[in-house]
Image (cartoon, rainbow, N blue to C red; front, side):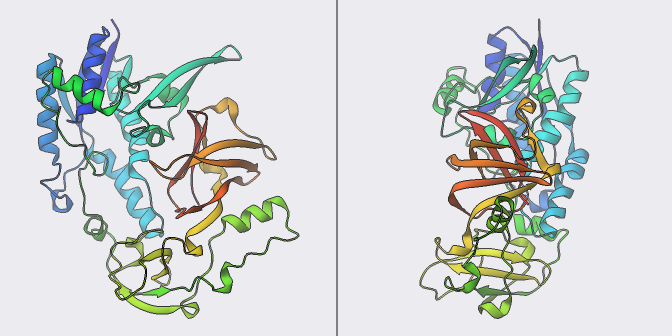
Length: 394
């Protein structure tokens, strides 16, 4: 009998994943990951880990499977939290959920599971896995979940072939209502439980307070840039393809002299491109959006309304070391291109794009200009419903 370790998070998805595996004849072990100790920045009544671990235990008891808690807070701090602080300090916006899957669930946690004699690790992600043969070798595919509203393949965009080979996603073919129905039929305590909205396994965190542990508040200016400013007139005549893409992906260099000061803030590293809330600037005809942050000068640049030209770019760049192919057999060589569907954030509808591989990295050129392309986030690219690769936006 094959042994599977399920990451029981105390939510309905992983509970049903464990039940389905049991039905399929696997020997199932439930493990709860404790990744966080500091309650001072957690909005405690939203989703404290204690309540979650207790729910996970109740589910394991109901299913009659062995259960234990593993404390991964040290590794989590080192690989996720420190990385987050580091990125925010540089004025970038990291995606902890993608990293948590790559570094914690399918690495540290997976190694623990395999040391317990497990053949596989299973999670409650809404995505699917299949396999094909390429040149006589088994190649694993990461496919979107059947529930288009819940597809979570994006969060797994950094997994490797090795990690995928040992992963199972039992609920990937189901919709969320179907999952809740199974949980209700089985009278699992998590059947009606709300989805957690917080950081991967920390719960709901007040981000500014969280960041203030390391990044000190410092007063800076909020500058509003007019949509007709000459900086938005990009000339591309006579440029090579690479130069044209570089120009389209480039960060514009704003200066405080270009606009008018409309307010103050507590630190540019607390803000991200596309952000609307938390600016506390009143009296504008339309909402203000962050179009750029400068952590060097501690300035936030904003534009009026969601169609301000400073929010849109036609291309983005991924450095060579950050290009990651799940399907290694599809890797592009310098000079090659590929038509794909891509997204720059979870839940964004897939966009038509072309990948252009050059010596120093890859440009992703979109058919339509994209709003709020954010440094530090992940772009993921698909062929039909298969996620084949991803990279960190630089």
